[in-house]
Structures are given as C-alpha cells and as structure tokens.
Image (cartoon, rainbow, N blue to C red; front, side, top):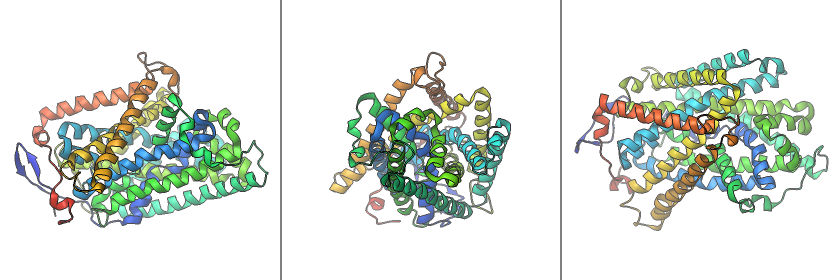
Length: 504
C-alpha cells in the first residue's frame, strides 16, 4: 500500500493509506504512445486542415507551429508538477495543492467533461471511416447503425481500459504504428506527385515561408490558433498514467513533452503535403467536409489505394476513443480519493488494479451525451465539440499558473527554474487565457457556430460551455455542503527535498 502525500486539512496535517493503481504497468514508450494516440493525429489534422487554410492560406503550417508554443510551455508545467506530486489526477491535484480546493475542483471538472464531450464523436468517426474503408458507404450513412456501432465501440474500449493498463498500451502501440504508416504513405505519395508535376489538382511547391504565422494577423490568427490548440490537446493522457508508469517522477512528464514534439513534426509534414498537393482553392472549397477532406484527397493521391487514408483516420479515432477515457477516469479517481467526489468513484478493481467504477461512469455519461445530442441534430454534436476549446484552454492555463505558484519559493534558485518552471508556464497560461477570451468573444456570435443557429442569443458552443461551467459550480457547491472535508485542505508549496531530488 502506498502512503499518499500529507494534506493540510483544517490547518492540521493528516494522511490516509489508500488502495493504489497497478505500479510499473507500463514504461516510457507506452506512455508516449498513449499520449500521441490521445490527440488522434490523423483525425485531428483531417478535421482542421480545411478550415485552417480558409483562415491562413498557405500559412496553415505556420499556425500549427505557433500553436505548438503554448502546448510545449504547458507540457513543461506538467513535467515539473508531476515531479513533486505524481498523482493521476494531474491538474486537479496540482491546482488544489497550489491554489486551493475550489480552483482544483473546477480544473478536475473541466478535464472530466472534455472526455464526456468528445468520446462519442471519436467513436462515430472511427466507425464511419472503418465502414467506408471496407466500401460500406451506405451503412456508414445509416444513422441508427453507425450510432449503435459507435456505442458498442465505446463499450469495448472501456472494457479494455478496465481490463488492464498493459493491454491498453499494447493495443495503442499497434494503432499508432498503423496510423503513422498510413499518414507517411499518404504524405510521401503527395510530395512525389507534386515534385513530379503529376498532381491532378493545382499543386504548389512548398516554401519555408509557409511556417510564418505572422503573415496572418488579427482575428484570423486568433481563430487559427484556437484550431491549432485543439489538434494538440490530449498529450497529457501520458501523465494521467503516472502512478502506473515506471519512473513515475519523470517518465510520464517526459512522455508528455516528447508527445508534443512528435505531433509537431507529424502535423507539419502532413500539412505541407496536403497544401502542396491540393493547393489552397481546393481546400477552401471543401473546408466544410472537415475530416472527410482526407478521403476526397485520397482518391486523387492514392487511386485504388485510397482505403489507406480511411483506415488512417479510423485507427486514429478508435485509438483516441480509448485514450480519451483515461484522463477523465483517473481524474475522477483522484477526486474521490480526496473526498472531492463520492468515494465510489475511487474504487479500484481488485484484479486489474484499474479505476473500474469511474471508467464505466465516464463511458456511460459520454454515451448518453452522444446519443441525446445526436437526437437534437448532427450540427449540435459538432457544436458540442467546438465547446471543447473553452474547457481545454481553461484547465491548461490553470495548470500553468499552478506550476509557478507551487514552485514560487524556488523560481529564483536558478535560471532554469525561472524560465522552465516560472516564466514559461505563465506565458503559456497567458496565451491560453487570451485564446479563451477570444473564443468566448467569437462564439458569442451565432454565425460563428457550426450550425449558425442561435441559442439564447448566443452561439450554441458558448451556451454548452457556459452550461457545463454552471453545472460544475452547482455540483461543487452542493458537494461542499454534503461532504466538506475536501474543502478544508489548504494550499502549500513545493517540498524543497522533492524539488532538489533528495527524495523519490
């Protein structure tokens, strides 16, 4: 049994001995792969490349490069916070220790709800592209069949999560390999045809100038960066597995950092290939196709081998369906252990040593959200995904600020501490806060929503985001009165012994 860090309750320290997750279940490479798959690279870039080109033209790769900066800075915060508090609740635990229980609870709520919002959509895309890859287009267009299979997929992925982290990691290793191979085949074929002047579209020779995001200014840059943040989101799943990873103090944090770097290289390579082969006009004309832009290009680039692209997006979405459950379930587990949620969410399967109750709850709520929103309209599902940008920016920014606050007594000890633990995470947080404010401003206009409809005079994504925030506050206040113990915790600072490596 593991002794959990001492918490300040009512001004006096106390500690509890709690059941632990299965230690050393996975290694650094497994954590890295899970962090990569959680972002759903093929699906993410397919979904945003068209809208990015509409916004930035040939400078779409530059927007992706600029979006990488706040992600890397926040990844640094995750690394250094995990060193002193290797808790699967990540943002929830760290913000609670640095800034108090109210802020910590809201951070945990945001992480949990991102999983609820997106899991159903990912499963839907995974099923749809798998069916189309096998030539079953009519079945993919049959709503009840596609949605039924999506629910089955969520249940299967959830069962794998519960059955053990090792099995989940092995499946993820296979899926990331397939996804990367498919993307590389597509990119190489596109570049070859561009330089051989064999493109069937209005191809453009790539230029390093495409990496300059400042060629795009004003609101266009802001909108582009919001899309860019979305495609990187999910890498922190590697850190949510910190208690189950060998070398928990450093390996999960390094996996998160390396995930963002590998994603940058992958996104830039594919974005350059797509823009160079198709040219901007084709992408602008088909921007509304979102993730289906890849199948449109696949036939042009690969001919009868276009199924490769279908399976690239399918494996990407299926992998992310599983990995997106991880942060939400581990966060709920961590919250339950600290009495921030009912204790039942802290139950650990006696055989598999995984958080079975919280995992199934996340899956169940995600399925309910997916089915209910689909009954409203397909546009409502896309609008709910747009609300993700608000939650993502919020809890990432909260983590960056918590890092500087928690380490505040150590920031002047060295230049490294000041830059990597203090200034970097704070700058990343400020960038994300700026994007959050910009998103609220833009989404307040119904014309900027996917459905272009008005809910209460606002865009549906903003209404969904506000609704989730209000629901979180109401639930938090209610639980505060039902079980006040968590709210007796007091903020602290990083332990000097842990900071300087005197303890593990």
